[in-house]
Image (cartoon, rainbow, N blue to C red; front, side):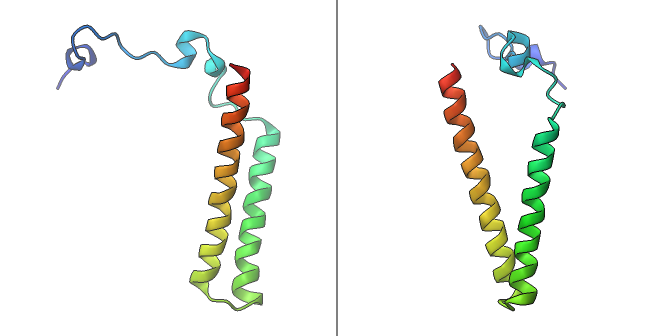
Length: 92
């Protein structure tokens, strides 16, 4: 068993988190706004509804419906990531 400072390479200081540096993550990381929870819940409900619509109404098959809804979810996550990156780069 080793202590962190024993495992570090010589001459390197321990990594500091953005909260230690007083950066944008200085706020409580566990705090999520109500709007964020609302929109994530709404998107989740739409994706589950999309899955059920494709599977039960269109009868396109379980795997196809899962793939379609998961693909849409991942595309939305990618869009949110890109938008967040662009917004953060404009701030700095």
